[in-house]
Each structure stands twice: as structure tokens, then as C-alpha cells.
Image 1 (cartoon, helix red, strand yellow):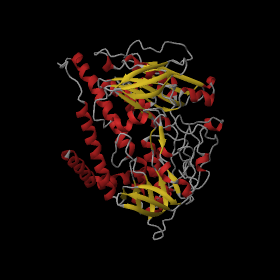
Image 2: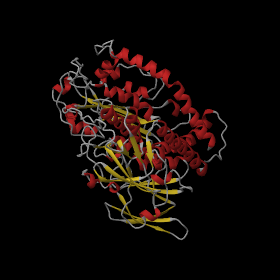
Image 3: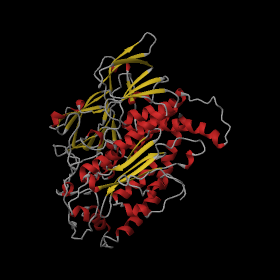
Image 4: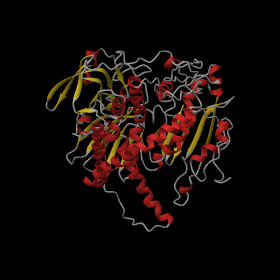
Length: 605
């Protein structure tokens, strides 16, 4: 443990020692690149910086002029379809149009950004961030970097089983990071057995040690907690380990271990995120666990019922199976709601092929603890009405998440909510002008860590760095870390058809065979890619979908391409890297409409 923390501290020190070198070089490169678009006054560096920050992106593609509209699969699907002309900055310089081909930003940029002038002395802080997760921390650190006085409140209520954690939010402690580590442990188990086919002498008695795995994962998390606290201290963000609630729109009451503390601020950012839901059935809270508990579980999970078929449920079931346990997935309605449903079906089929059973159209009725400690779960088929039961070692609820608005006393500040989320405008502003929200707590936006981080940083820059840039929630890439991973960016096939009509959509698709699957004779049955595109004209790509190994690494680069206006001709004229799975996007030539077989005959021609 101490060695891990020392390594983390050493890494921070080493980065800081060299950061000035890269910062200087980066500034030089940035100035050179921007010279293509701006008339730079060589006698005034301050004026140059003002020109850059005042730039307002605009977009007007040929397709949008003709009335096409675009929306994000996981974001706002009802964006208005209008166009913007080239803008002029406050300094009088002509700013070139952004020409984004997909998502219109008329609503986003039709009103000027509200500027907040720090009123030092009137409040305890210029900014108080409520929530110490990814979005809140990013916002707090960025605001301090631009001269604001900032405090960050963070408090974690223990789960019903007593699980609690340190600063960093869901992602670091009970989300992305431990999930990816458990997923990696699962994949390594597969790789060990596949190694025999590649000529390695492998002991057939190899098996995972759950206790050792949990200890390793938790040690890493604690090291990140420690690094985060050090980072906040060094950046002069005051960290307050307390539960905050509004007294009025400029005042918080923080419940600390030492007692209550009253805090005032000119501006607030709510970034409290959410926590897993529990079903309202007997025994759910007393005997079930959630993703908040699984990564620190002090016993082997054994035979596990995973209730819920969203990405969290499928990911947990996937790594449990890979680690040698027996998960069963209970599905109330559909798998991976909100994702492309053809891809969702393939994901579920690939998991069933690996031996993970799915109880479809089924809901739990009760959980009862047996004398031997096992859990008797009664459940009902919603189509037939048939009631059945089974015994499990662990029941894991993955039925969705609830925004943490209850403890905030938002009515005292006048902030409106929509169920358990907070509606905001294009600047992340609530109905109260000086109170903002970012991350999973806001209504109708992708609940993803990178989204919260970027939104938090951009908000702080608008507030304290004279920036006009706002968060773009369209075309956000994401990955589901199931045993065979699924990644996507842009529109699902269903949403594309809904937006443009079936006759205006062309779907290019194909199955493929990863080279590394050949020797161990792994199943390639569900390795599949597709591009959802405009049928005519430029054939803009509306969405890319990939099912296969290292899906996140594959789709990330294509996400930038989608943002930049990727078309099918461009994709087809791109030379792939061989042999990789990512190159399969450049080999797409068969459309669903053609009815031709999308199964490849060979790998190299």
C-alpha cells in the first residue's frame, strides 16, 4: 500500500517538474496553428488571447441548408434544425464558420454567454461546487486556475451494507475504474487459457483469487483518492468533507463531523451525481447489493442474480462469468435500452453463447434469506404471469440510478427539478441564474464521466476565463465493457430512421474475424460492425457501431472523425492498418438494402 502511494506521489512530482517545458512548447504550437485563422497583433499577446476566447463556433453545412437535422443517440433528440452564418468576434475580426456537419447550434449560441464577475469580500467563496466527482472536481480546479476562490463539498452516504469511499465520485470509486479493472481481470483469465493454443505451458488448475483481486482494486482506488486530495490542496481548492444543503440561493449549510458550518458563495455548481436504485419489494434493501458494493465485496459472489440489463448489469455479469462465477441476468423489458437494438441483441447473444443465462420478461417479487445464508428469489414472467423461484448467493440490483437531489433542499434556493434530475439550459444554468449543474444530475444528457469532466471545465472557463465555448452533447462515444465489447458513436439505426426516414438511410455492415481469435478458435459469430449513413448526397455517416475486442480503443478515433463530418466515401478511401479489427470500418461495402451476405470470405483480400 505504502509503495503504491509513494509511486503515485513520485509520478505527480515528476510530471510537475517537466510540465513547464511542455506548456511552453504547446503555447508556441497553438499560436502558430491559430495564425491561419486570426490576424494576430504581434505587439499584444493579451489581445491575441482575447480573440481566441471570443471565437464563437458556427455551423452551416450543405445538408443542413436543405433542412436535415441531427441529434445525439444519448443526448437531446429534439434539436431544432436551423443554421448560423459566419460570426464576427467582439474585436471585429471575421471568424470562419465552424461548418459542423451534424448538430445545429442555433439554440446553443443564439444568446450571449452570461459573465459572472467575482465579487471578492461579499461571499466566502466565488464558487462552491457541491459534489466531489469527476465533473465537480474538474470544474473546481479549472475555476481556481482562472483566479476564483473555490470550495468543494463532498460527502458519501454509506450503502445499506455499509460500503463507503473517498473523494473522486462514482467513476473512481465504484464505477468506471474498478469496473474496467475487474473486466481486465476477466479477460486475462480467458487469455491464460488461450495461451495454451499459442504454445504456452499453462497449469490447468489456474483460478482467480477474489480476495486478492478486490484488495488490489481497492488499493489502487485509495491511491487515486490520496492523489486527488493532494491535487486539490496544491491547486488551492478547499475540500470540505460535508453534506451540503441550501439555506437560500447564496447560502449552504454543511454538515461536518465537527458540527454544522454555514457557507456563502456568489455561484454554485451542483455536481452530486446519482446512486443505484433498489426495487420496492420485500428483502431488496436488506439482502441485495448494487454496483456500489460489488467491487469491495468481502466474499466471493458465487451464483449471482443480476437484475437489470442496462450496461452496468451486463458488464457486471460479464466479468463475474469471466472470473468463474455463475451470473444470471434478469431482463424486465429490453437489453441496453437507449442503444442500437440490433447491436444490443448481438451483445446479449454473445453473452448467452458464453454460458450466461437471461431470464427475459421477468421481474423480481421478493428476496428471502435462507437458514444457510443463501437467498431465495421469487420472480414473475410478465407475459405469462408464471411465478418461479431460484436460490442465489448474491443478488445485484442494476435497475437504474437516482439523482441525489433530496438532500440539497433545492426549494430553499428556488431551483426546479424534473423528477430526480435538474433541468439546465445550453450553459448548464438552472432556472436560478447563478446556480449551475453538471454531470449525471442534469436532465436529458449522457451520464458519462468524460461528458461531466468537459462540461465542468467549459463552465468554469465561461465563468472565469471570458470563454464562450459551450458543451456539445452530440455524438458522444461510449463503450459497454461486456466480454465481447460494444462501442458506438452517433445515432443508432432506429434513431436515424426516425430522424430521416428509412428511405433516406443506408446501413453498411459486415461480420469480421479478428486474427487473434483464429489459433485459440474463439467464436467470431458476433464480431460485427456497421455504419449508419445518409443514402444520397455526401453520404454523411450518422453513426458507427462496433462489436468486438478493445471496442473503446477502436471507436475513440472514429468519434473525432464523426465530429469532423465523416462520409462513406472518405471511410472507403481510408487505408486500414492490417491486421487490425479497426480496419473493418474501411472495408465496409455491403449494405443491408442489397441483401448480400455480409460474412467475409477471406481476411486479406
